[in-house]
Image 1 (tube, rainbow, N blue to C red):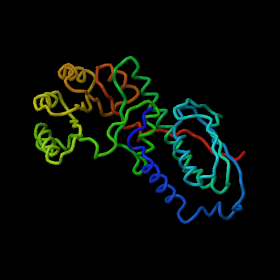
Image 2 (cartoon, rainbow, N blue to C red):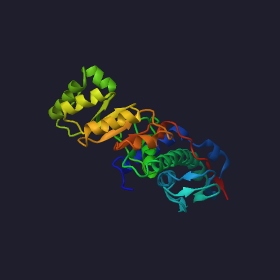
Image 3 (cartoon, rainbow, N blue to C red):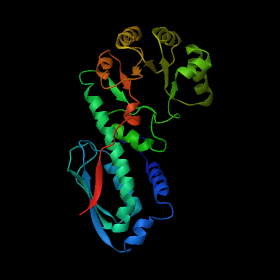
Image 4 (cartoon, helix red, strand yellow):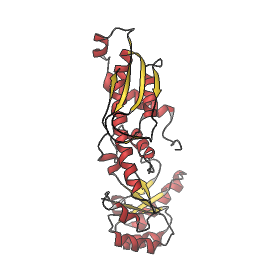
Length: 286
């Protein structure tokens, strides 16, 4: 997996620092009060569910941030299939440090593994088609970095990371701008005046809007929102390969194969990050 642009050392440090500030505050008083400062111990991260593992690399960074002297023995990697009883890693060092890092490591790995597991399942349903699975901006505030990362680990594709790296003209943008052509022309003028080079995608709600986009031109991708498979096939025929097409809106594991079979290039599913079940795991002394 190619390292995405948002996974910089600075971004990882900022995420971990903010998460630990939220959790630890002015001190892990449970560990400080009950464990001697120089006590050393070890723990193992035990998988208690079946799925796709994610968050191992992030766990490395968390443990190192809490205490650079902690020693990890990583036994399973991001993207590995896991089952009940598997040991993903062990950690050894200062007992207080292990306890302070424990919950953040588990919170990240459990949720990331749930996302990677569901992503991998949906990707498997696209077999035999050209469609690729996209995530969305329907992420948990301040937790987007690990959620987007988990989608990649599960075999999906990141859509834009945020509002800053792509222009997507959704239905409200189109309506506020006064129509499809007006929204496109205003966006192109904005890019020209600011010197920015950003791809433009526009959402369409009907075949008539798809035709309006084709008449206007000047975009990079067309989103087909809440269209049934029959309508999607018509849109694919109408566009005839001139622009990549993304199907979006209410797509589930029951419908995704039919959507992919229409010939669209991408399928975006917000549920990858907003409606998943975390994998169960625990960090136990041994």
